[in-house]
Image 1 (cartoon, helix red, strand yellow):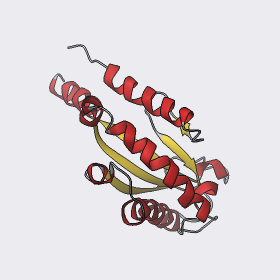
Image 2: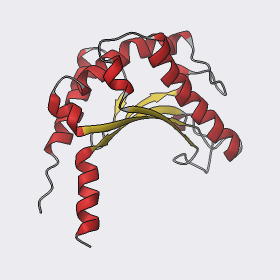
Image 3: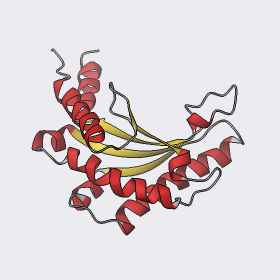
Image 4: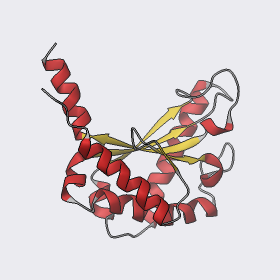
Length: 170
């Protein structure tokens, strides 16, 4: 069976295009569609409270990002989930970092759904969840500020399908 990666690539291309055309400065992974937002934009170091700049950023980013997901029925179908992941650097202990990352992703989630209004809020609420990653993907050899971030990560149906096909054919 041949796996078709086109729907995923089209969604990611649309995210990249909309971010650029709306002057939203984020890093989008061209293979996965992960959108990384550096900690310094959203939070003060060690804090779980969104900064005013972070709230302003989310007010511009979320309607555009969510707008892409719900712009076409095939995009909405292709994206099964959006995970808001909090990440920390290796500075500090694992338990504290995991708690910090989870509370940060929850702060972003709460701000989006309790303090913002945008046209696709209701359908986005059905797809989104918050998760803490702690320092799982950080550079453990040193405290790297770029490891401190919040990532919006798509879970694509086609990836789930691909995994199921692989499992079935083993």
